[in-house]
Every structure is written in structure tokens, then in C-alpha cells.
Length: 283
Ligand SMILES: NC(=O)c1ccc[n+]([C@@H]2O[C@H](COP(=O)([O-])OP(=O)(O)OC[C@H]3O[C@@H](n4cnc5c(N)ncnc54)[C@H](OP(=O)(O)O)[C@@H]3O)[C@@H](O)[C@H]2O)c1
Image (cartoon, rainbow, N blue to C red; front, top):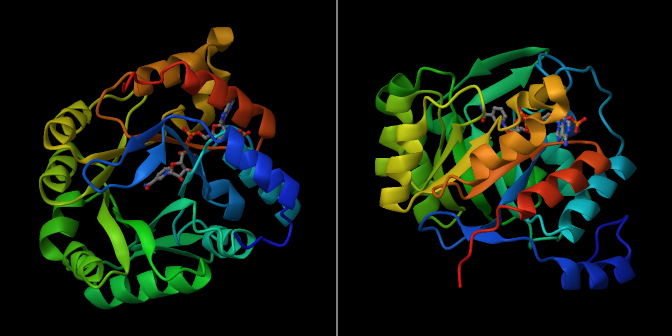
């Protein structure tokens, strides 16, 4: 295996041995992902975000430390997006030739000069996937999701984004596609018609339960975002919000992976320890 610049070969050898976190197959895609995935908003963007604390974007060495630790603890799944500032570019640079990571990215949301706007046209979808391939230095992308603006049904029926992703899948440029949806109606459509849905599920918001249940029946991939209430679970009274949040999400049988964003190695270790308690018995 070729090495990224900051990678130490002895570490790589030991990583292979300890990479034991439970993997679940992402629906019917044949792609195996760790039950805990790594969210990477904080690798590239600190404007217009809603986390409890302000933060500095970590430098390459710190990002590499997070990536190495995550891999060594068994995480193989990363969620990114063009809208996460420099996240894709940095992953491409730091994980050059590390094609053992499963990478999920998105199309449709563009974040420029501190503002988001959306383009769900076929042309933009194609160009966005080409740009992600270039930035992440890959020949294909594992999972690409439409980054919904919130108006899911309009994006689904009035734009060409999903049809274009399906074509790119047929061409072999992506392995699986779907949507990071924001409504029950949208999520249900996605699980009927696509490979993967990214849905919200946490201690305070369970409105998308029907989406998870239907995905389970249809064997579609379910990736959870905002499972720790974007960090607010960690500041909950009594301090048990993090454990309760993992339990709440990972005991859902339809969930393939819970994507948790962190740039803190102690949090990462703690999250892996907690997630390990909800290992599904697959034998
Ligand atoms: N529309 C979309 O497609 C969409 C929307 C939102 C999110 N996402 C994806 O989902 C990922 C996760 O969502 P999210 O970042 O909004 O929220 P989240 O994963 O619910 O929470 C992340 C926050 O929790 C904190 N945290 C993590 N572990 C912790 C622990 N053990 N104790 C205390 N705090 C902890 C992190 O801070 P530290 O860095 O200090 O650990 C971070 O601020 C994102 O990174 C992104 O990849 C996608």
C-alpha cells in the first residue's frame, strides 16, 4: 500500500491488525462501513456552522492524527461534501492512494464567500462529481448524495440531480447514490428509488423514523447525521447525552453507520468505546 506523506509504516502495519470495529453493509450496495463514521465539516469550514463552541480549523498534522486514530480504531467511513470548505481537498491530499477508506461526498450545495447556494442541474452534478474525483484523487467515488436544500420533493421531481447520479453510477464513476434528505416524504422516496439515504435521528428529533423503518424493509443503506445533536448532546444536563445518543441511534436495526464529526482525539476514542457496546450480533 502506498503511503500518505505523514504516515508511518509501522503504524500502518499495526493499524491493519487492530482495525476491528463492526462493519455493516450499506444496504444492498455491497459496501461495508464502520458503524461509526467520521464527519468532516470541521476539517474545512468554521463559518455558518451551528456547533456549541467556536473552533479553529485543525492543521494537516492534527487532521492526519484524527484520520490515523480513526483508522486504527476501526473506522473506515468518511462523510464529506463540496460545501464543507476545504474538507475534500484536504482528504485528497492526506489520504492520497489510501483507497481503503470508504468516502461519501455530496452534490448540489455550494458554499462560497460565507454563503450557501444550490445547483441541482445535471451539468453541475456532473461537474461536481468530476471536481470531487480530482480533489480526492480517486478514479471513482464510493457514495454520492444529493445535498438537499430542504425542499426534498422539489429537488427529486423538478431537477436532474438524482438522474445524473444514476448515469454516473452506470458509467462506474460512483458506486452508490442517494440523498441527504430533510423530510419524511423525501426520505421515503429516496429509499424506494436510490441506494442510500442520509437521515437525521437523535434524542430530540425522530420524525424520520418511518424512513429508517422502510429502508430496513427494502435493505437500503441508512447513514445518520446530527446523531449527537451537532454537539449539543455533549452539553446536556447530567453529562449523559453522548452515551444516550449513541444508544438511541445504534440500537436502530436499519442504521448502517452513524456519522459523528469530531476534531478531538479524546472524543473520538470515547465515541468508539461507546459505539462498540452496540455491536450487532451477526454470527
Ligand atoms: N445535510 C447534510 O448532509 C449534513 C448535515 C449535517 C451534518 N452532516 C454530516 O454529519 C456529520 C455529523 O453531523 P454534525 O457535525 O452536525 O453533528 P454531530 O456529529 O451530531 O456532532 C458533532 C459535534 O459533536 C462534538 N462531539 C463529538 N463527540 C463528542 C463527545 N464524545 N463529547 C462531546 N462532544 C462531542 C464535536 O465536537 P469536537 O470536535 O470537539 O469533538 C462536534 O462539534 C457532519 O460532520 C457531516 O459530515 C451532513
